[in-house]
Image (cartoon, rainbow, N blue to C red; front, side):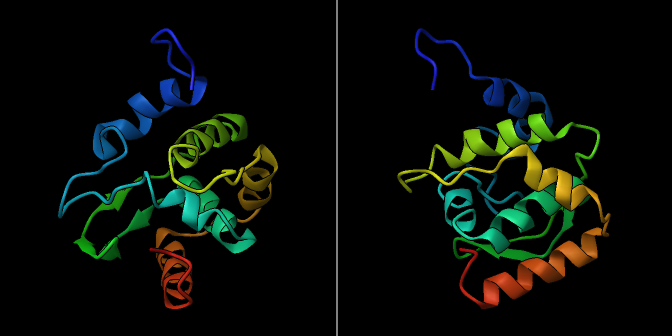
Amino acid sequence: MSGCGKKSAGQKLYGPNCGICHHGGSGLPGEVPPLVGRLDLIARTPEGRDYLARVMLNGLDGPIKANGGRYNFSMPSFRRLNDEQLSLILNWLIERGATKPAPHIGPEIFAKARETEIGSNRVYDLREKLAAEGQIP
């Protein structure tokens, strides 16, 4: 986090790209799931980091459960952003969670995930598998 009221590069990118729906990271009850306090938990494993990269690159359609709440939404793909920009956004969110040291998602994870474009329905299937394994809160 930068001092003196200055926004980090990740926060600057988050606002116009993700903040429109996810607000400051807390989401919107019943509509858009929260990100802060969840992404750090998901990013603890290689499978979780791959899943987060695929969500950003391919989008995700609900309905889903997150932190005990139900959400039915459609998140668009952010494939138009480069790997470094996507990394900055996710790491800014991850660092706001309770996991210390915070997991890190490097641009190379996005580059690898970008090699195979999958539909949002396949991303949903990945999510369901990880949720069943207890890797997604």
